[in-house]
Image (cartoon, rainbow, N blue to C red; front, side, top):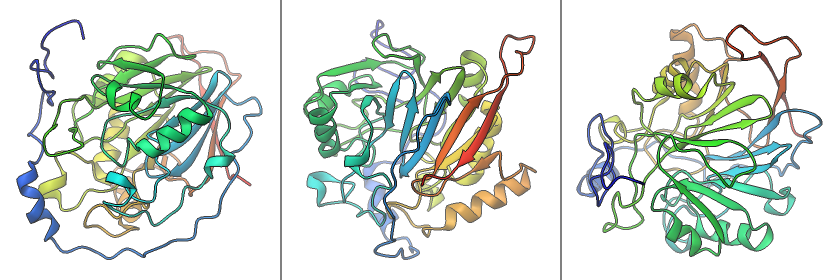
Length: 337
């Protein structure tokens, strides 16, 4: 960061430049007393091998929670990778995952880049980063002030960026985008590190990975500043009770509005069905997404979820570009064998 302060940094801590402040730790006990819909202790998740690229601009495979494998000709990417059994300290505390990762770690192709949106345990999992460092030595692209934590896991190559900055060491264009969230690993380091989303360009297609975020006006800026979004990966889970979660997490209705704001050709939901983090049931986000789509008359194929281990192929159309210089994209959905 070239400036001592900005609209989201006061020189010591980061902040959301607009909207209500995030909830304080003192509100957590009240939130934990809210009625919760029970989750199953385990849901069978067959392991899948990633689909082959086979000439596509990208193949996006849902591994679970906010972890996607994005295969491209320029290299393979993991988003917010977590392979641990718990989303918390020491891989023992915190919510326990009910679905194993849909692509086993040993079946991952060579990973060149990790997009790490912020430092929460369910998005920045140090045991997984250690495994990735030993096996692949990937570049980690992450927001400001997360580098020290990432390097503690043995990652050698880290690029820290502010919102709207573009990576210079990655094999493909990657730009950080704003998010409305917060950061903390302990009660004492709140908002000492930044949070973000990402836009990457694979071949001729733009993929927006929103990270972990509440709804905000910044979604409209993404396509305005970075070009039309072909595929948006948007969080739809961990949203109840709303009095607590609204400041940090979207619900499906918010995610549908974000889909409209970024003017995405297609969107895929994430951040659901893996860790029982909040009060809603395991399938509630899927039903609420269907209701929100219907309210806005959005066809199911415009905003959907993938099965765990399912892949989504992005193939550039052969049709000529439009007058604004951007060609059309044909998106096809396939299941991983």
